Length: 330
Image (cartoon, rainbow, N blue to C red; front, side):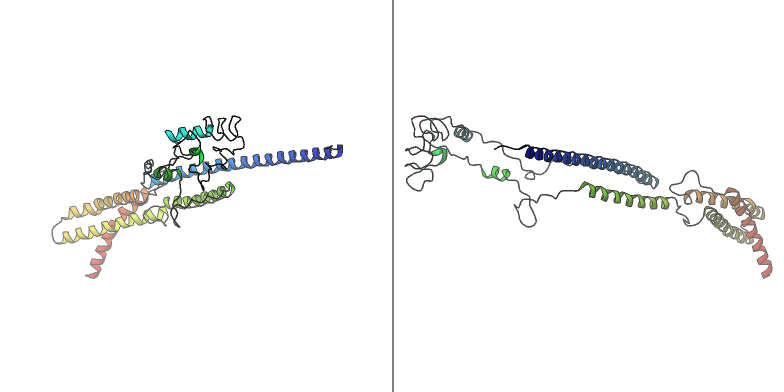
């Protein structure tokens, strides 16, 4: 068959186009792989930063990082099936001998009873010891023949053509997956995973994790005591509350002084200095314990001058108001 120059040129152009298309496909695939690797690296950096931030949040609220779980131990017997090795012993010897065909009665050998041999035996296999099975010792064994396979070859009496595998090894040799529909049904092969789709899902989950992390940080920047109030309003409320508690103690001391349990000097010392100082330090400790956010840069203000003024003015003013009220009622 002769090929003209035009046909040869057309074939050359076709091959060049196919080669060019292959190069373009390879370049596009390489670019896609680079983009996927870049996206994976970016997601890895984001997840690493999120893990570090979550560790900081956990330490801020008093939760330590849980220890790593124990490594998975070896499976229970029967879970993983080991593929049995080649048969050993007489069966292996007979199988290898019959496959190699080096014996005198091999089916593919060159002995006197071979089917394809060149010795004295019949070449086409019509003799008394043929492998094709047209003589008295035929392989199908529907008539007078009594042996089959390598067992029917002279000189191989008692040797089976296919070694029988024990029941236990046969069960291990055929690994199956147990499914809800029924036992022994092979497991279906998982569908191919698109890396682009998986990366997009991972990116969306990372965005969701960032959103929840920002919400957690906002919550962590609020104190447990009056979280929606401003720091100034919180300090005023705390110092005023402590001053009011000191005012109640002051009224108790006044009543005790009226019945003679407390003298006038002790009552005056507690009203002018003792109770205001106790109220001031009480408010200071409350703001430091419950008025401080879990995550905050530096020390939050406690407004010490304002607290000192409130506490040292509120208790004496409450005493004066009490005296005016008693005198007015009289």
